[in-house]
Length: 244
Image 1 (cartoon, rainbow, N blue to C red):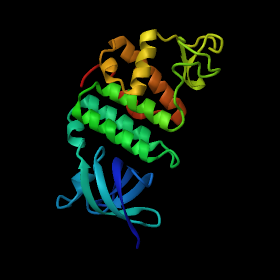
Image 2 (image 1 turned 180 degrees about the vertical axis):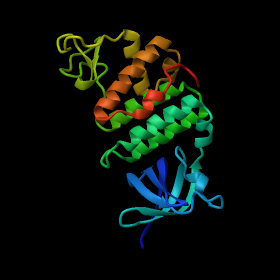
Image 3 (image 1 turned 90 degrees about the horizontal axis):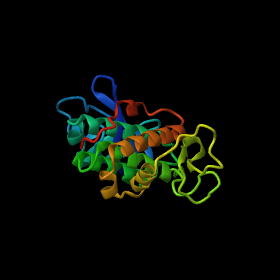
Image 4 (image 1 turned 135 degrees about the vertical axis):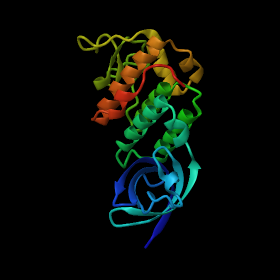
């Protein structure tokens, strides 16, 4: 039976039988993977703790017909413990892995893997607001999938900004000529924050006013869920405050 090795982020797990688990993983080289980890729910398991959600691992798998089988697992990033003890980090991480799980195979690229690993590492370290880390991740994940929001020019006609309307269905910021009736207005500091989140300009992100952060989070959530075509259920539990 052929084997292969890859680096993975554990997105979710569910029980199989009395001692096994089925893992859904985003890998560095092979897109999304589903595999059986045999015996990991036993206290004597050699690598059960390395195969929990938010963990990053180097795994050796047997290639199966429908599900692969995990044979070895070595930890590359133990972020789960530091994330799980903080509610804001935990809920933000859940929203991130849920969004990653929605990627189709063509979108599950090495860049998406590295982006998710970086986001989980940032959450575990707690250097920035958990919601800001999530927001930046969602914007960049959408961009890597070909859905980068228009922030500097009109997303519909390309007219140079600044503009003051955001419409998720039309791709981002919209000029006055293209904006539909009732399109929500966006204050300039919020537009600037969206651009900083996309670019990873963390000094500006950390200095943003709470009102701008909350407004940006709402726009990003609407944009991501529109393009993923289903709601991200975990977002309902994510705080809009500024805990680290």
